[in-house]
Length: 459
Image 1 (spheres, helix red, strand yellow):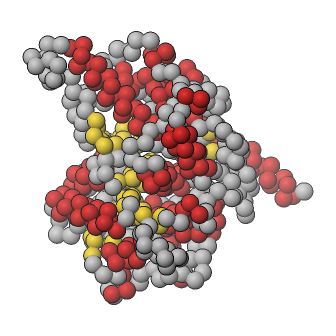
Image 2 (cartoon, rainbow, N blue to C red; image 1 turned 90 degrees about the vertical axis):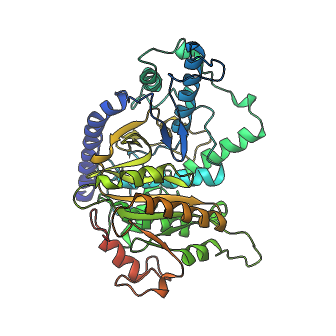
Image 3 (cartoon, one colour; image 1 turned 60 degrees about the vertical axis):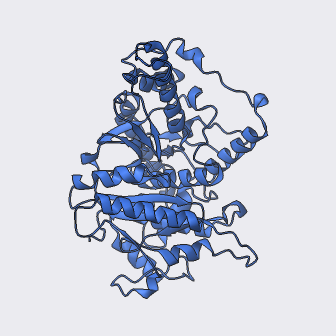
């Protein structure tokens, strides 16, 4: 009876926290995000232009404003569709109880786990669907959970971005402009892509069986002393994501692996070994790899000298985002315009969605409006994510990133480095992670305990 009473108190407490966070963060979702017409917008390696004051091919003298405006409107629409197609993972409530606790929500403490999930989800989207994939229903989000959204709110949110580019002019017939494409009109490719889209989201479901769900990540964290309700830093989450991918037995996930940089160093031979680690010796293909690089962009505050570096990374085709945020408040950074970062916010608490149900609703897994934040507000602790399809891709990516590191670094030492050879060839104080025979090796546990929310190796 006493245990039951404690559980009830925890449930009431969880509901109160969820309500408080919704009140605290819902206004952020409803505010308009303004973008400049005169600067390009970068989103995960793609560049979008919204300039209206230059001549176009059909109007050499620049006098045909209507045609130019139509082009701008199309570019805005392409950007919106690209952004909304990214998978958005937020706080949830009323999901199955987390083992070893009475918690049925991650409201107030799970934001870095959620941003880590978003980064991994983007890596899987690129891996299975390609960077150019967009969700067919991205521009017609509606019928969202009435407790979290209303269709009116969604329409306002999705139109606010375009309005900001066009001087607050509302698109004519906005509500009728985008018609939802019914599944009956889809071809085989669209049907296959939608199945894959749903499969990827299901891997992040809030249930104990989901490969990369909150329950599974917390279970791995338990092995190193972290418990449900603890705050997780970007570096710790990087190791949890690596473990989750390694431990997955889903046949579809055997062609991808995760590597976490050690001591601000990416050991190229270790990465390539991971890419060639197929159990079947007959396989000649190599695995794709997601490279996670925990770094610190300054001391107590982010050093503005690193702005060009961050912009350079987010403009790379290999980039799958950055796990970062403001102090004690994690965001998933996916792009930038000028000196502002574009991000998705996990802090809005939504109701649990059972992803095991056929045709479960997708709307709450896609964010209808991007948010911007000044780079100088960014917390210095973050984890950079890169995706490489094969060994050749990795070699090219390491060259591109090295160029950015050299061109943006005014200090003697870069933020991190790519070096030839294996980690075992170098003798550092923090010994590298070995092939573990247990859930987490002794070295891994030391690393995870070493990485607090603000504890990174500084070069």
